[in-house]
Length: 174
Image 1 (cartoon, rainbow, N blue to C red):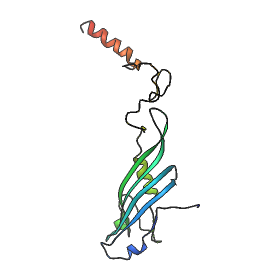
Image 2 (cartoon, one colour):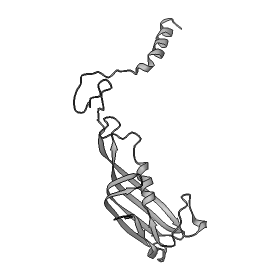
Image 3 (tube, one colour):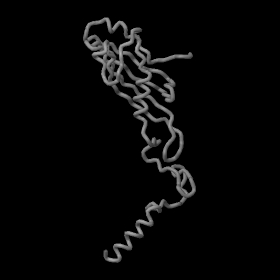
Image 4 (cartoon, rainbow, N blue to C red):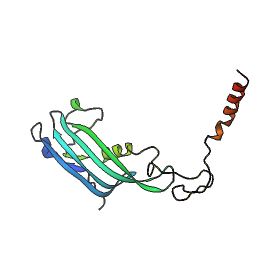
């Protein structure tokens, strides 16, 4: 279905309730594309509370997204968790840093926020599992699958020139 957005919540009735009223919405979808983020097995909840300033939305969502391991270069599913709270202000005076305003339609679109917070949970160098051995720097073999017999140098050869200078200065007694 084109334009399907499982993170659009009709909260107009909550705005009409008394301060303190709260309603929870389940968030569950098998797969959804949030612009450049593909989220699979999405589960979570959004709790919307009526406050004097606006609607306070607390979201907890978990999802898997396809990634490439930074060590072995194999595709895997990275588990992401986002937990955030934002205020949709009723008037300009109550607007917070996020700048969110309660929409006149009474429908909140949480997709941009969920996307943003899930992306923040993606590691800079995603690893398929903590003990991934990666690729051999000599022959390129996947060390998780095969032992190619090549030893990894204990030191980075780019530091050899500095190491030589240090050993010269220490041997000369200076």
